[in-house]
Amino acid sequence: MSLILGLETSCDETAAAVVRDGRSVLSNVIATQHDLHERYAGVVPEIASRAHLERITPTIREALAQARVEMAELDAIAVGHRPGLIGSLLVGVSAAKALAWSLGTPIIGVDHILAHLHAGQLESEPVVFPSLGLVVSGGHTSLFLMRNGVDVDLLGRTIDDAVGEAFDKAAAILQLGFPGGPNIDRLAQQGDDRAHDFPVTLFDRESLDFSFSGLKTSLLYAVCGQPVGRGMEARLMRDASSLSVKEKADFAASFQRAAVTAVIKKLKRAMPRYPEVRSLLVGGGVIANSRLRTELTSLATHHKFDLRLPRMDFCLDNAAMIAGLADVMLQAGRTDDWTLSASTQSSIVAA
Ligand code: KG4
Ligand code: ZN
Image 1 (cartoon, rainbow, N blue to C red):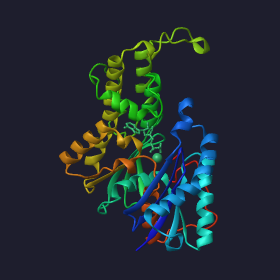
Image 2: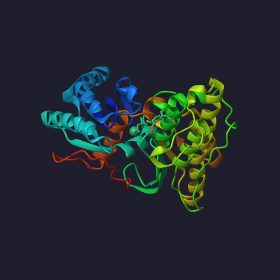
Image 3: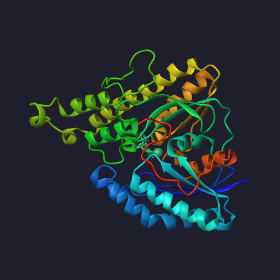
Image 4: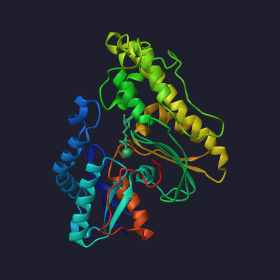
């Protein structure tokens, strides 16, 4: 039996969670900073790291209190140490080191991308590997072949924007506020998804890579018109302020159809190539998208795959996924020492 405290500070959520045996979530506390970043329409790294510093200790206290666990009962401290904003990651890593040192427990550095893929096993049965793994978040869009929870091969990734980033930029173009994904999702429900035919980039038949910048630019030109002038002098004709709610909803629904189709088509390509794989682990903020959840469910039912759709609160950045995967690492003896440091890069996705 293991009782692990996980910490997550890679971007703009300060999170702490206590997880038993890698799957049973005793607490999952998330202090979001969205209000601090909203007026900049994106995460400001310096503001994020200062806010983590203020929030980390109360968040840890709250996670322990909700779990009714004393510090001395913990078997290990886990921390998401890569990838992410360096100043933000360092707050979590420093807090984890201080705790592990004072308690005399092992410290475990967890890759945030792999942790997203563990989210579907929280409060659920263990999955049978090998699996396909899909991460779709604000920073990443990647497809993996997973031998287990930590040993994975990268099959494809975005060559430009992450899908969540495209959702956020689409919301900015439509003047819907930050973070954009949930706003596009909500508005799309009132829109006609066939109103506009946006491009879905698939590359050649072999490729499992993704691209979302063409889709984003198509939306920009559809909403704001083609730019007039050249280079630094180029100007857009109009902005979204003249659009009615119905027109915005049609853009949101059509954009969302194209973005989700791009993801689903790559899974359809990958599935028959690995006949030994019968399970699909998915994670990252965009898994909260209602259309993507519906289409993933139909795809998995059709191909008889064991799909692990994480609960909504386990899709967005959280520390339960960090503590959960740390249990797998602890059982495999993959703990760290005091040289553990933060990195902006994932160990599994090339820069
Ligand atoms: O995993 P996450 O919390 O942070 C990263 O590791 O990036 O993902 C955040 C991303 C944001 O781009 C956000 O707009 C997107 O997930 N997102 C959504 C939805 N909810 C969050 N995108 C589409 N539909 C949603 N419902
Ligand atoms: Zn994330």
